[in-house]
Length: 432
Image (cartoon, rainbow, N blue to C red; front, side):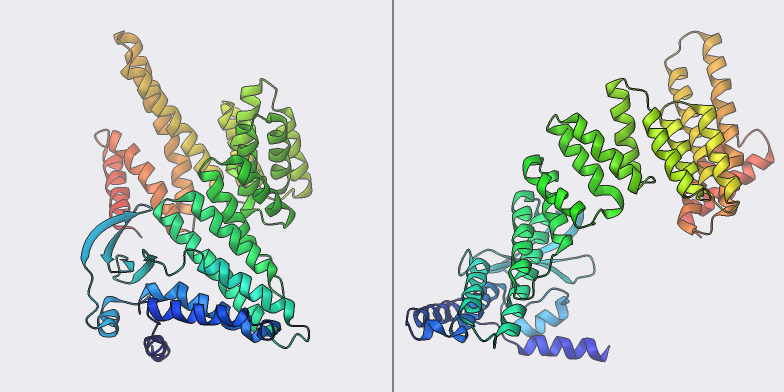
């Protein structure tokens, strides 16, 4: 707590230049670079870069991300917002305060989460700061300013990432992707270059989200070259890109490579299943890939769960149950096989319920209802076993949701069902 207070005081004491003063500082520093002698000194260019960075932050006022309203009220004094409104960004509620040169967005904890500049001193302040640092590096023949230049450029890269996140929150995915790309370029241009793999991914992800598949492709390809796969999601998204670019064979190739590396990734599995369903090919190759993974890790229970999941999605009910049970046989504490069986029966029951709702023949309707209830009953035992096995309370609550719904259906059939409903309803409502 002492450290947090000290940090807040330090930030508060570091008063930001006014936009007018920041602009004058840039003009003065830029004039110095026109002097042939001064232009040969790295310090001249570093001063210009720093001036542009001050110009970038000047319109943000004295607030800082993470500050609470009480702190800002003390720091900002008479600088009051001209308007306040409730807004929603990326599905989350914020309070937006509008000032002369910026907007402040406060989260549900009344902390400043986003600073949006509405009246920048220079639209391209970060770009110009980067260029100035690069000029400093060119004339720094002795490398005396390498440390300062490196820190400055990496600071710019961090600002680009921050801007990218802001644009993402505001829903401008194109601008977000461009900011993340600039972060990558800056971090790699530093005297001690660093590859910002997360920024590479974010540049591709935001381009993919905006359906700019041509732009997204090279970023995701580079992610894989850098061994940054986000647990297989990069493979799935790159395959989706190729599908949208009408290159089905390349999509299949990417998915198969992804499956070999991440056989448990559901996005990859679904992508491969969809490919085989749409192409009309038999999914033998998919099971061959899985068999190879099982040979490498014969005691990996999750691989048999994945096999069950694939059979389930392909409509192979008995094979799915067999594989799910095998996963628990290999690891008696592995709950997901039983969860898979429970969900299989539960979804089967929902399908039968829908069929019954559309059936007008009384005899057929009653037969479907009987099948529906039988499927629900079949789901109870595996869900109960999974509930008793898992040590994860969140998973327990999720299983309890299924069991609550099932027991509700049968609550009038006997006291055990009423007790089951009460038990799991309480868990769903209050947690564990």
